Image 1 (tube, each protein chain N blue to C red):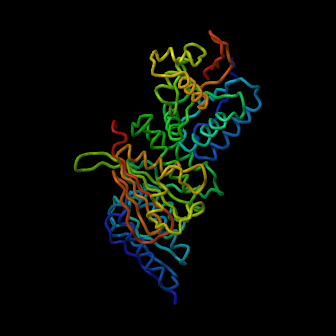
Image 2 (image 1 turned 45 degrees about the vertical axis):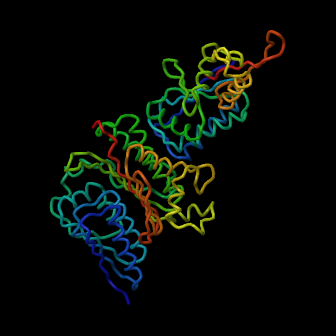
Image 3 (image 1 turned 180 degrees about the horizontal axis):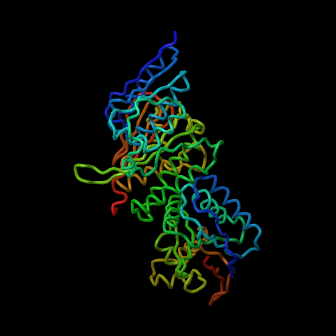
Length: 296
Length: 186
C-alpha cells in the first residue's frame, strides 16, 4: 500500500552528532511501505552547520531514489531559513524536492551570507567532471580566505589542501557525487572564531573502498576509518595521502575531525575516539578549526 | 658540468589532485626525455597560485623518484618561482615521502625543500659554495676525526640518491688512488 510519510526533525541543531538522529528516522521509514511521498519537516530546527547542510542534501537524494514525491518544510526560524538560502542549500535542493514554508523577505536577508566561506557546492562524479569543479572551488576559496578572512599564505595553503583532499576523496573513492560547505562562526561566550567544514557523499563508504585492496572481512567500520587515516593506506597503491594529511592539518591547528562511514564514527581531537552509530550510506566528514586565521 | 635549459612553464593557476599531477608529470618527463643528458630543467611555477599535496606528490614526488633511479639518465630538475603557498604544499608533500628537491629563489638563493638532515644540508651547501665536492672535502668540512672517509662517501652517495648531487668524474689523489667528484644540482 502506498503511504505518505513524515520525518520530523526535532533536534534544534543539525550537526555531526544530531544528524545521526535524522539518518535513523530515514532508515526506519525506508523499512516500511512503498512510499508515494515523504515530507522532511525542519520547522523546529534553529541551527544547521555545514555538516548538517550536507547531511540534509544526502538524505534528500537518498529518499528521492526511493519515493515518488519529496517535500521539505523549512524552519520557522527566520535566521535559520535565511542561512539555508544564503548557503545555496534551498536553490540546490529545489532541483529535486518541493520546498514549503518559505518566509517572506528571507531571500533578501543578505547579512546572513557574511559568514559563508563556501556555499553548499556539489562535487560531480569523476566520470562526469574530472577536476574543473574542484579547481573552481579552490580558486573561489583562495580569494575569500585571503581577502576577507586575512588568512596568511601558509593557512591558505593548508586550508585549501584540506578542502581539496576531501573533495578528491569523493571523486577518487566514493563512486558517487557529493557536497561540500564551509562556514565561519564566532562564539558568543568568548568571541573566539572558528571555521567548520562539512563534506559528504552517498558512495561505497571507506570499508568497501579499502576492500578493493585489503582483506577487510575482519574489520569493523571503525577500524576501516582508523586505517584510512594512516599514511599510505589507500584503495589505490602508492597513495594514501589524503585523509592522513587531513588528519595532520586538523591536529596542527588543534581542530576536531569527525568521520562517519558505515555504522561508525571516529572523532579525532587530541586522541581518537570511535563509536558505533546508525548505518547510513557513504561517508560524511566534519572538521572544526579554531586556530586558523587567528590574525583576522 | 650541468647545463640549465629553457624552463618548463606550468601554465595553470590552480592545480589539484592526482589527475592534474599525473598529466603534468608526463609532460615534464616527456620534455626531459627530449633533452640531451647533463642538463637541469627548471620547473617554473610563476603562474601557479595554489596546489594541493596530492598534486605535488603525484607530479614532483614521482618525477624525483624516477630521477633518483636514473630515469631518464643525466637529466635533473629544480624548482623556480614558487609562491609561499605552493612552496609550503611542495615542502610538506616531499617531507612526507622523505624526498628532497632544489628550489632556486628569485634572489638566486638555494633552498632544499622536503626532508634532508642537517649534515646532508651542510654538505650540499659546501658543494654549492665550491662548485664541486669530494669525500675528502667532506672530511675537511667536518674538521673532526669523528667521521671516516667511508662515512663521508656515504653522505655524498645519499645526496646523489636524493637527486641533489651528481657524480661527474673521478680524480687521482695525492699518494695514489682515485676519488669521485660530485657536482650540485642547482
